[in-house]
Image (cartoon, rainbow, N blue to C red; front, top):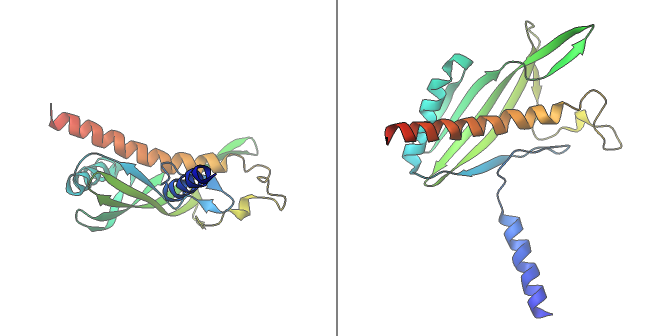
Length: 178
């Protein structure tokens, strides 16, 4: 009996301190942050992430603030974030996202800070609260009609940014160490 109790406590402790590795969309909001293990020093990972932003400047990526080798805040845009059919035509929105990356030796913390969207060729902007997605759900807890693409759009955006960053850093490292 004591062994079962000890194992149960170890499992609870391990799962409590486990860190998310992908963003998930839920009624309570988006995962606050994910941690990605990445071999190298904080300074080198910071340098590679800065190069990633520079490489994506044509997509509107900019560093809005930074503390060298510790963290950086990045803003960028993503065209065709959400698309839907309206009146026989496809109507899409452009997302403006803000992320923060914190660097430590051997890993980095990737935080989704903000997201706003506007219909393409329009001026009205909707700012989203990443900590509460109840607006997308009915009272019974099911996703509202015509909102079934929303969770995947959020997850794809932020998980895709993280994967793009890792892919870029791996290619850059490989090119430097050929």
